[in-house]
Image (tube, rainbow, N blue to C red; front, side, top):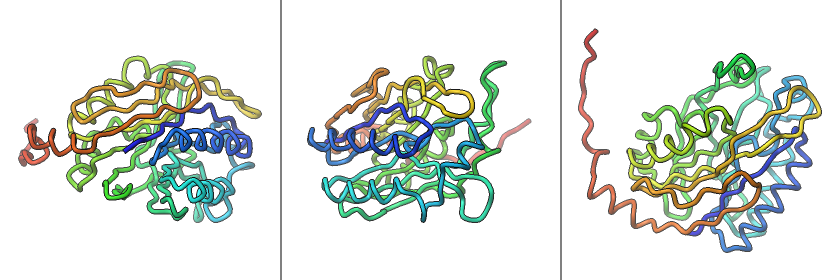
Length: 276
């Protein structure tokens, strides 16, 4: 399977971002990708809740989703929209929602990011994602052709039980679209991606936002970049560095079965109690 990882520097303007990601998806398809993946919050990177309220829409009213569904159908590719920031239909908070789109342009799966990025990295770098976003409550496995794919988003990466559950449910590819912090990226990003691949014997595909994001409201954000593809043995197949663009990778899906046969740790769970 040939995959294309999209790395981009989204602004807080959804129309501008749609134009940018459309060009990158077309470039990935032109390079032969059957499965194209975009990063977290493809449509809007913003630290301003007020600004998000002004530009974001519900899924039913959003303009990015139907445009990218049409594009997937036109190009005949399976497309993972890493996530879109959307208004929730039934409360004031937003949702951070990943979409898997088939080559027919139809939505195959939706996944709402479950783990919220509520952290204090430094005196100047604090995030409270749960203030603005409603967490999801279900894990999702869908398909690219006949290959099971487990959907996750960014901060989910720090919760290995989710990836184990997805792999035990059949997932052979795990997707981690992200907008990873430049504070934690240098020390944690590659290590965590490789760990999730090794623990589950899965391919891990992590398209990422990168660089300094233009902001018309609120403070500007920066992200780490380094979109990655990691194989089931933990080898890094590709690292996109810090520039926007497309990284193409060929996956040998037979490697998943081979690694899991040689190292069948997914079948070795034991129940236990914790003494304190």
